[in-house]
Image (tube, rainbow, N blue to C red):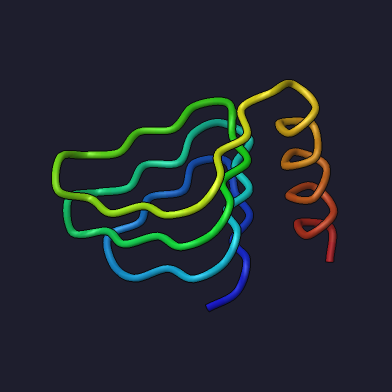
Length: 74
């Protein structure tokens, strides 16, 4: 549970929360995501589960990049 920030996020298990990726979010066949995805690219493998909203607009990507950068500085 919680939010995840990063350049490339790969989900292989259960995730509850929002995902913020500078580049891509990959939900593997064993993955189960419930929440929002903010990323430039999204990949959902056959068998992977997803419920939520996906935002791939430029503004959403800038938000993901800014939040990831601010967390890296901490």
